[in-house]
Image 1: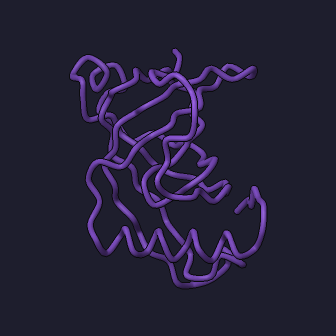
Image 2: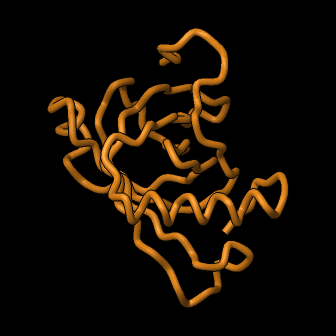
Length: 139
């Protein structure tokens, strides 16, 4: 699948390149939800920002699909060994799906439903991460 947008930067928020495990579940359309069995599936983040996230998955998910995402963010971006984590739950819309050379899919996801509290937590995490310099950081 390809990007539905032509070209150019569309993001309002800077993204922090980081690799974290996340869980996601397809909420709509119904045929996609059924094809995944309505179950949570593990993926890897590629980057994270205040308005969206990029993940790497083995599943070919249609652009415009609605998904729920759950990720754990450390209070200390320098060390994922921190004992303090925030569980972030977000709903988003798949905006792009790019097939990678290894057969996995890079999904660009725009947040469509996020609590103000979780948005602040992501913003703080990204700001801390960007202060470290260019990533990706792997945890």
